Length: 113
Length: 113
Image 1 (cartoon, helix red, strand yellow):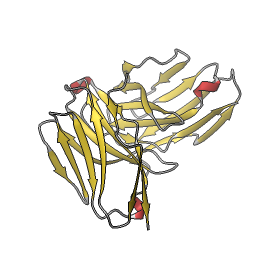
Image 2 (cartoon, chains in turn purple, red; image 1 turned 180 degrees about the vertical axis):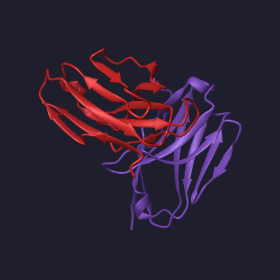
Image 3 (cartoon, chains in turn red, purple; image 1 turned 135 degrees about the vertical axis):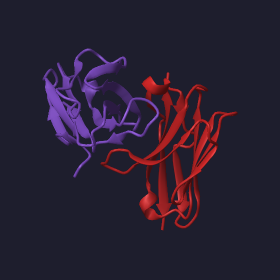
Image 4 (tube, helix red, strand yellow; image 1 turned 45 degrees about the vertical axis):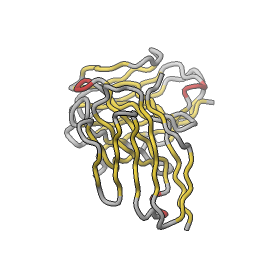
């Protein structure tokens, strides 16, 4: 079965608020994690990634937190904008240098103006 | 220039037909993939190719066959199409196999009637 999942299938936030999207993974050997954003009718687009030797990484308006103790990954989006509305996926790399990305089920983020 | 391009964007065909989806990447990446996204947005890897060699062949029916004439192309051929094959198929590429970002095409929506 798939090892990556999400707590919330849908998330609705007010424009300007912060968003937090959560992801649980079950493979403790995963060495790399990545968040993708998928807008309607498009392919997944890279947002931010993090390696297993880190617990936090920041990008522009986004932060990824990794808690290996409880196998939890989260994506924080600051000052959420209407353009952030999309489906968000977490993915993990299983298999090291010969691995591939296994995706979670996705969370739909809706931003209310 | 489009980094990962796949054609066609939409494909409607009858059960039992054979069809192909083409994919090209101009990023100079060594690894290419095919993913299937079902109606619930779940993304599942089907194949990956590294330097024209099949690395991973997930448990997909042998009616699906990836063909790579060179490392910039990975086409997906499907024989004897079934209703359950209806989905969105994404091609992707990454610089190397393993713990690295994958770049996705815009997807091909396949509808089998």
